[in-house]
Length: 109
Image (tube, rainbow, N blue to C red; front, side, top):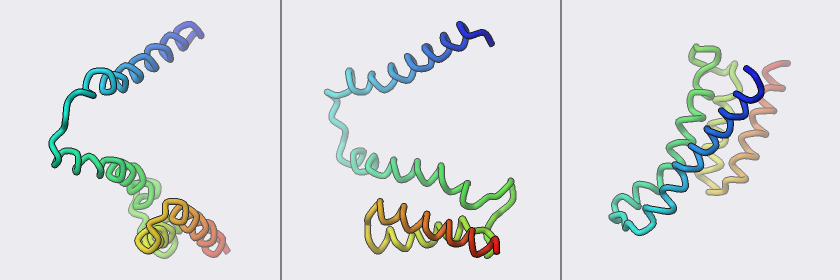
């Protein structure tokens, strides 16, 4: 692919992404959503994050990864427990990463 085509594609993709996001801000800010929709939208970030992370935790190379030999599920359980206890995003991330690195080191030995 020549550089001009690459830059044109990047520009078109950026304009498309910006346009779709800006349309909600520019044109839909006057619309008042019902309370039940607003309550439901509060769960969208958590649902999207779960949809992105869960396959990485549960699968390894296309096969189920649940077992004591895989550090990812161990770290995920630790992160879930810390999140439930502290309700702190930073503490959850730190605990999950620490347990992941520790489990990798222990399981590799």
